[in-house]
Image (cartoon, rainbow, N blue to C red; front, top):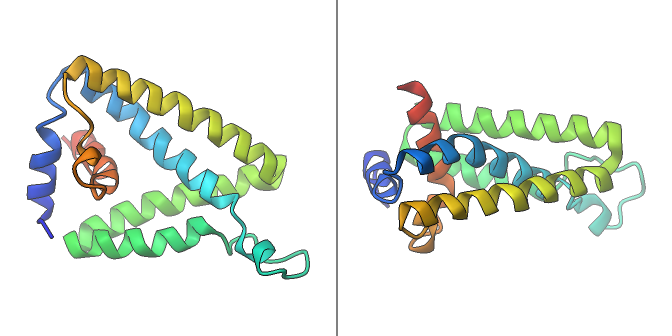
Length: 154
């Protein structure tokens, strides 16, 4: 596994165009939020046949948090705290939205955000003239939010 600096350097190779960088500042958080929202809609309790009301926090998103947190922890404790905190904030937002408009509403909202944000991201990569970094290594899907965080910090 690469170090955090190696991942960011490699990711940065396909994100040099200023427009593509700006697009990523807005679209990566939107993609993370909407992906968590879509995974939130995959309720494990319902799959297990638990009687309603089962725990709405028992879903694919919460399981995904565990794997992502482990990945980020391998990069460093500060990275793990910041990135896991961001994911948990997104999860909290999804829980609040689901409690007000329902799981179906959350799925529709997050599906629309996900499609729109990815379309804009691919436009950014067209402008950049480079394929997305995750095409070579799926781990870059978790590096994108870290790249955005590093840009915001600066």
